Length: 120
Image 1: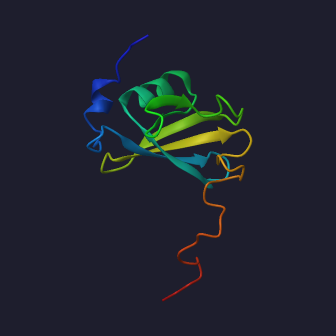
Image 2: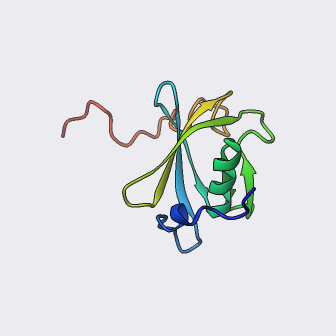
C-alpha cells in the first residue's frame, strides 16, 4: 500500500498555512450535513485507502479515525473535492451520532444565524 497521497490529488489541494483542508461529512442517504473537521494529506490518504473517515485533530495534534473511541463510525461511500480545492466532501454512512456532544449532527443546535425561511 502506498504511504503518500496520490500526487494528482495532492496537487489539487489548497491547504491552510498548517497544511490542512476543511472536510465536511454528509449523510450518504439523506445529504444531511453531519460535521466539519480537518484533514491533512495523510488523513485523506488513510480515508481513501480504508474508507473509514480519518481526520486531523488540531488540539491533539494527531490523526483520529471517527468512532475510534465512541463507536460512532463513518463508512466513507464517496469523496469529492470542491472546485477551489480547499474543501473535501465526504458522503458517509454514519453509525450513531456524528457530533461529540451526542447529537445527530454538529448543526442540530440552536446556534442558527439565519432561518431557512428568512427572506431579507
